[in-house]
Length: 230
Image 1 (cartoon, helix red, strand yellow):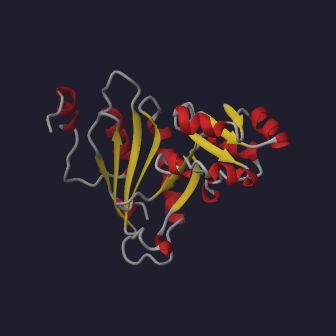
Image 2: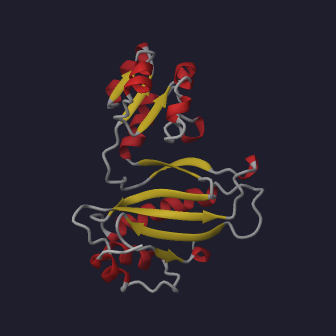
């Protein structure tokens, strides 16, 4: 794969054989984010879990203390008083049954997170085929199926992110923007790691965090020492 000049220059600052402390890794990622836009800083965490087993699944959510730096658009499926509550809390879109054809037939996806009250899950379930593959299906573990729509909307707006294993047992999540200070990024990263450590399934034996890489949208990855994150 041919890399651009900026990437090649940035990569020179990183020693690929080194496992960095979290603070040093954050500083390097920030320094090597040289694109013309405000790059997203992401964490890619390979775990010792085997997601094929139900007792080794990891899924949850955590509120990053400094948010993600991204404006999140929220769609809430609710009716009556709960719909009003969602609007008052700052949800971008609120509705019910009438949104199904809009999403299914018109391919409308002007939202980043979907929240639903439990009584609306029958309706939302009909969208499983389109929402599921995009990772947008509401889930009780992630706090997106709830009667407390106010809390759900406020937390997501404040920087709540969802983490879960992909098919290769890796967790991919944003931890902020390149414009954040090193302290803000380090804080967010540590909060995420604490949550993932807490979510360790009892069935997982041996090393839990196998490898941890911090990277910016266009920049090279920086390896973090997983042994120091346990």
